[in-house]
Amino acid sequence: MHKLFCLMGKSASGKDTIFRSLLLDESLGLHRVIPYTTRPIREGEENGREYYFVSPEQFERFRTEGKILEQRCYDTVYGPWHYFTADDGQIDLSSYSSLMIGTPQAFVSIRECFGVDNVIPVCVRVEDGERLLRAVQRERREEKPRYDELCRRFLADQEDFSKKRLLSCGVTNFFDNTDLDTCIREIADFIRKKTRA
Image 1: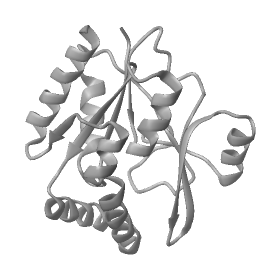
Image 2 (image 1 turned 90 degrees about the horizontal axis):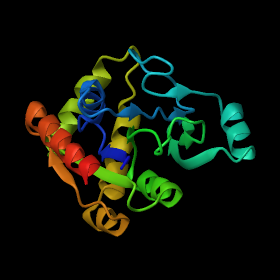
Image 3 (image 1 turned 180 degrees about the horizontal axis):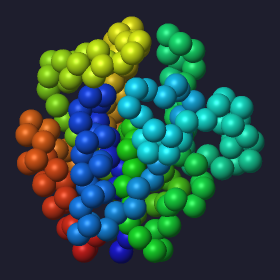
Image 4 (image 1 turned 30 degrees about the horizontal axis):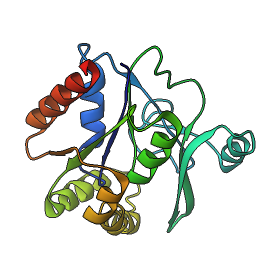
């Protein structure tokens, strides 16, 4: 029974670190789904690792060819940034379970493509004050910090991850990231149970 696990959480909740740790856990046997984005690459990121970084023209080509499974567009202070999951062969539930990072909106779209029983939400939570501190610390490391975009993202997450929206999307699996190791262990145990069911 192969599943697609959609890891989600507000910005600076630790998703990327948790994502990498779960993929390194060979006992889980998860394949990575790498999303695409038109936003600029950040310091320390690598094309094909966190995202496939594409131009707006490449995004349009994917869209025209009908190869987008889900997409989101954020009207940032730097213009529109598109994030999307492509139908590019990365997801093959007949052969293996996969892990992707997404939003509640992305989860709903992906679930429509692969089925309610096959796409499992995993939502990471962090207290907002702690999350804001983490976000500022991360942004400070950038060559050109974009604090205005950080603030926009922080406020948008309040709406995107509201309790009402999460429940309406069917997101009911929550994991508190107050201690990273404990959070990773709890999510790994959850994934094992779901893939054995």
